[in-house]
Every structure is written in structure tokens, then in C-alpha cells.
Image 1 (cartoon, helix red, strand yellow):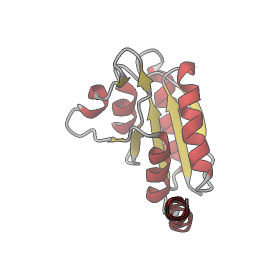
Image 2: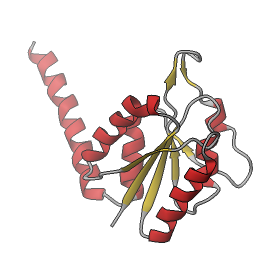
Image 3: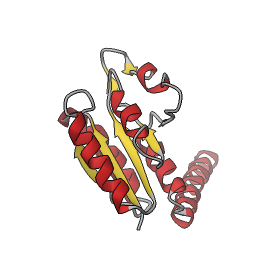
Length: 154
């Protein structure tokens, strides 16, 4: 069984996380959600990662943390599974604070995806949900073709 684990740095990240959860549902994936800050409760982050690592099986972590994104690096250094950093937007930075997600120490390499739906898409691709991904891609193509036909006839 495939597992998507979403770790958010604080409860304020929940509306952004809900967008990821909604997108994951399109691929038949139901994530496990947790609030665990690498800065404030690192023991909890370690506990969660160790629990999911012990379970084994295909898994992807999606981390949602803004400002100083230690969460993504911290999780990535503890697992051999893929980690997708999806930092939330910040009014302080006029968008997502991507620099702390992009600049990682050597040996730490989470993927960085800014759009929640694309983070879900990458997780689905990693977990081998080919049929669901193909169906979503075809639906998007059809939506665009229909919009084009409407313009031509309109």
C-alpha cells in the first residue's frame, strides 16, 4: 500500500495543505496529516518519520513549511523515500519563501514544487499511479480542447 505523509510546520498551513489533499484525492491517494515543526518539536518529526520508515512500503513525504524550511531538509536526511517540499505562500515574501527550500546542504535533496496540485501530481507519479495520472492528464487536455472549441464557435 502506498502512503503519502504530509508534515506541516504549523496549524496555519492547513488551508494550503487542504489543497494538496484535494488534489491527491484525484489520484486515489489519502494522505496521513501531521503538524510537526523541525524547529520547535524535532523529536516529534523524528518519531513520525521513524514510524513510517518502519512500516516500509512505497511512501512519499510532502512537507509544508514556510520561512526557514528546516522541515524538508530534516525529513529528507532521515529517509530514503522521496520528499517533496511545497512551501506555502507568504505575504512577507510576496509569494513563497523558496530560498530556504532550494538551498540544501549536500546529501539532502527534497524536490521543490510550489503549486499544491503539482506536488500531488508528483507524488502520484512517484507512487506509480499511472492510470490515475493519465486520466487526469486526458481530462485536462479535453478541458482545453473544449475551451478552444467554445472560442471558435463563440
